[in-house]
Length: 166
Figure 1: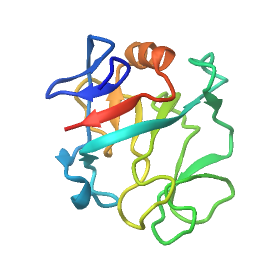
Figure 2: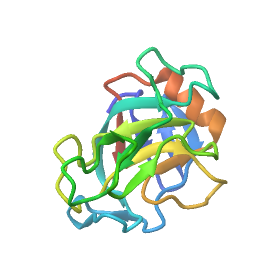
Figure 3: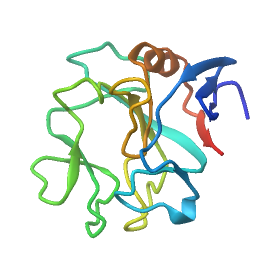
């Protein structure tokens, strides 16, 4: 482990020797082998942060490797589609998540390598790090933070940082 890793603890995430309150999936933490699409669980393991997306119309780039979210950007959660667990663009017929949301939850997204880039159908998609709805409110499987904490983390993250969930 290094200080630039996000380490999930029982009540917080440790990053750069600081503690940040967090939210996790409504299904709790599960072993990677048990993770399924739609179960609301956060998968245990070491997940590399492989991308950073942000809403350029709402916030400034948090890091020089962040990529703006376009108006047609979506994330496929359709296990039977070849683009499963990948960034896709509208129009896109299969099941997906809209990345350019009306609420601020996806104004800043850290993309992990959970079941990516070589996705196994049904093993779960879109394990992101993003803004929480409110403290303690569960996610659909992601890890979520208060807006200013997420920004602090994103500004200091490196392309080699990992999300470690034990």
